[in-house]
Image (cartoon, rainbow, N blue to C red):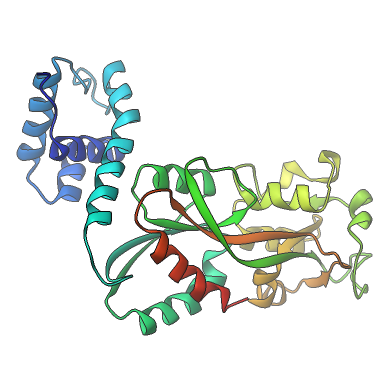
Length: 297
């Protein structure tokens, strides 16, 4: 019979991969550094392969270690899903790790978390703000239980429930030629230089697709890393931008002195939804969170 590494060893190894430090991984796993180091060495002996390259000062995995790091998350996620599905407990009680993207978090979470605490007092909610791609990886690896994302976005092995529609608004400084408009057709963007978030933010792709914007109409030289920076650059007269309605209603345009103009119907939009891993046993809880969120639209 082939000797197998233990789940504890796999958990320690993946913590080491995430933190890239034996001391930080030990702290995350609530064990001593010597305990974690011994577990990793036992795993290497069991597999008869070196997983961590100890010849360099900086953290590095061997090629075999890289392969294990790619496959271990799915194994751990499956076992955790099995244990969760087999257990019976009150919905949304205990720990729940929820991811959310930066273009949603500040506008939706404050009210959502208040409602969740009132309805589910035994919930211990852990929040992580990150880009969609990173949250998708963490969701697949079982590092978070669900995520609030903007769609469309392709995430294999993930289920999603829609909670609301978030239309885009045109935002510009008061001196812009469109500033006096009551509404705007998306065709008007054809000869308008736009400032958008940098690559990696799904809001950028959603805005380009929903508004049918050509690459030449965006100002890549001035792409921003956050909506706040984007509005500051727009206020400086570098160009106009597109903001999600939740940000407009949250006062982002008003607080930075911008004029926000809705688009004529049918408005370009993005879909907000809650995603969870198929077979994780978290579907009912994700739907309960979705029910809370849908009341905010």
